Length: 498
Ligand code: KIV
Ligand code: ZN
Image (tube, rainbow, N blue to C red; front, side, top):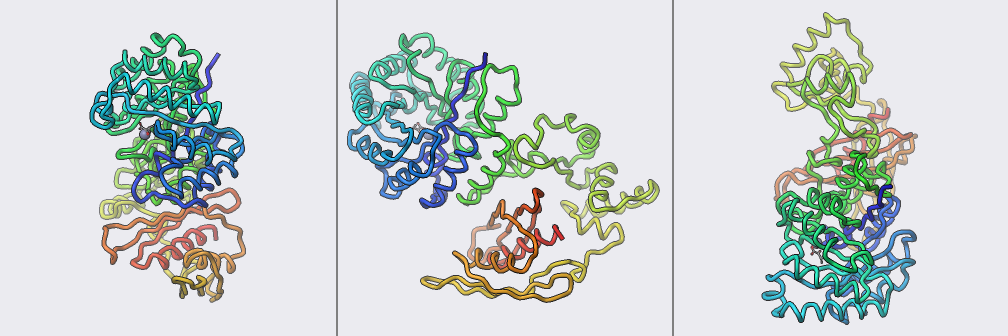
């Protein structure tokens, strides 16, 4: 029989500590609800003592979320624990996560203490937290570099004091996978009361080993994993939720399972990325833009014959409709034929051969060949005039104390239409004005603005993904004016539905 792995998501605590990723309370509630719908077991909603904003977010998330346990972080300090208990008062299921450093670095330099005194403080913190909540998780900070024998003593003492979950963080991301697995096994075998608690992994990615270490932890007895969406977090980040979930799902021989609805991974990943303004690297496992994109001729040919030749995950399992066949100078005839077919073109073999030569010449000059290029190659040049929809005018009013308003003029199939709308910002108002003019219901799934360099005169690249009748459409634009760029990308995506 398989064991359940509890998924403890700390996107809103360890993830949110990243500079520039801070969310307001409304955004945090949106992320928390998405995590609930994804099926996480625990949401670490914040560190209530750290700021009034964090306190309020824990309060509001506690009210808004029903199923997952809501957890608040504290130091091993009574005031922290009291404040966390207060912030968690509305949670249907609550947990206090308290702890202290256990490595020589932390004991000597950070805490200026002794190993014995640390055990006393750890036990006192757990006992104090137990006065407020039944479910108390203890973290042994820098457990990765802590002596296993000493760590076992700490763990035994805090379990005896009532801790229900014991977090073994590799705080600095230093451990080798085998070393981390051995640490968990050591605790499983040498802590007499270990069966009264669940061991948890919390791995950082400083050496790129967070996922491997977490899996080793699970294979050696840990039954909770602490993770973040897209692997965001301090420095090089935390273990990625999506990687652990998909490793467990893909390796059917592992004796464990999670309750995550993997089909919601892509959507949740995009939400976190756009709210936290943290772009995902294109080759990021599972959620990167290229994770299901094939560009070399040999791979494309294989995937077109049978997806499983080069794909170990069905893209639908993570909420992506299908893998993409990207056209580059390394693509073959099969890929060109496939992409032309998607655009509605079919050519006899001799014409396809000729088209392929023209395609290779173009692909040598251009990094990737898009649909407009293909139409041009196929003899159907997509001129501006041919585009079914084009932004002709955009005028926005915004600023402190102003109600954001946008007026737009769109040319749709040759006819000019205008509209005006308000919104919670200039982009929201502009999108609302566009929506007033189109007859279709579109839902914004992803909206990402990236600066190419760092200057204020920089060109902003805007990627938009929208959904219409269950199908996804992408739009793109680049402009020095990010509002215009955003509306152009939105219109570009809508034009593809037409
Ligand atoms: O990395 C770490 O040790 C932590 C603890 C506070 C749990 O984030
Ligand atoms: Zn951490």
